[in-house]
Image (cartoon, rainbow, N blue to C red; front, side, top):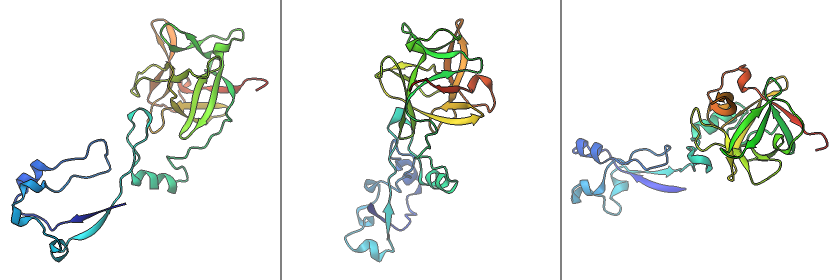
Length: 231
């Protein structure tokens, strides 16, 4: 907790104050500084003890840290408080699925696979015989889950950018996904704090998983997550 002194309004230099206002980068919670000290005449600066006499008050300053994943902006106090009031805090997500091994299937029972090693894309293939590439390990994390390949726990389903149209691909860096129930036996898989969900799409004749805004009930965005027998 830091303490700042807020000076009385400065009315003589409005244009210069606006031009000189600076916003602290990478922190949307902080506001503009009122003015640059070098833009005020020396006799307008507060000497020790003068600030209190001029009516300045002690104001507590609070900085909210950003989340580390992929440059997402941090949650403001307003959003955090709102989530707590609704009983679904943004910073603590429930984990409806235990951390173990699963198959992830679409509405037609096609499986999400880690087979396209050349492009590192996560593909969707028709039902077929058992293969390690059809299995995924879900591990609970702070904001949801990481989804890693069964055959290599150090390879994860992730996205290079969290933008609409990005393709879900294999990566050696953990990536967090939010998994929420979206109906009877089906789930929505999305980027935490973003309206971007796993969406089945065809690119160059191959079915892959991309990120798109979530549309409730769209069969291309609903996934069955079935526990692998014996796990």
